[in-house]
Amino acid sequence: MASRGQVLVTGAGGFTGRYLVDLLSREGWQVVACGYRSGSEARSPSAEGCEHLELDLLDEQAVHSVVADRRPTHVVHLAGLSFPGHPVPGDFYRANLIASVNLLDALVALESPPERVILASSSNVYGASPRAAAGIPESDELRPVNHYGVSKTAMEMAAALFESRLPILIARPFNYTGVGQRTDFVIPKIVSHFRERSPSIMLGNLDSQRDFSDVRSVVGAYIALLERGRAGESYNICSGVGASIREILDTVSAISGHEMVVSVDPGLLRSGDVPKIVGSPAKLADVVDMGRWIPLRETLEWMYSHR
Image (tube, rainbow, N blue to C red; front, top):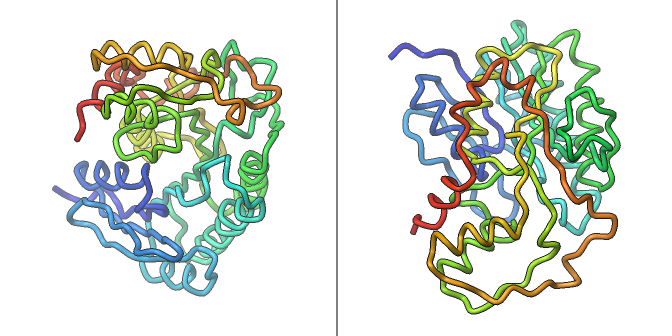
């Protein structure tokens, strides 16, 4: 199979990156998979036929060297700090803003710029949108309410300074999950408790509804944006369908045939929690076949059955 281009993927050793690298490789792309884990051994993606590099995006010289040497035709920038509950605010800005600027600066220095550069932002940039229950469009005002959201908003603003020289697309994924996601995220925590036949579980607000997608649908959307996305645009990565934690509990209980005592941990409740947050996938539907978007129940069955 002839290569469809050379894609540099940052954050390739992370939850999303491993799925993206695997799918890119299977679909005939040449992949430069860059990962970095401070204080621990970098986790390499499992896909064959791609180059694996350890790269610290805060090391400007190293970033320029890798980019200048590989000269990627496409870039998907996934690397960053993605857990909103992380306790050190400054880490968000180093990982999500400074690292992104270092990468964009290195790409601008290339004699021939990439054909597309996708930057992974977040639905957190919308904050407490008044259109959260109806489906937030990409045109909504950005009003982040935590350091994670502010750092991603700052990344988007910094990227705008490069848009005259680079074909940048912004991806704003809403919540998504799948096999391999850490159990400090709510759905892996729930699935793990059911799989282990735990007698009880402590959770936060059971009735908040969020727009959950399958990581396999999300990485498929990234590839569709690489191929057909429009430079200078932002795209929600979402289903447009909300599900509550209570509904997820009921679904996994039915899948597993197990019941648990569910208690609410006051420490997990957030003041001003928005009851329902979903995105509008209307713009995404221009480049992705939403009829193939994996339903949440199928995702939960996959996660529960995986050992």
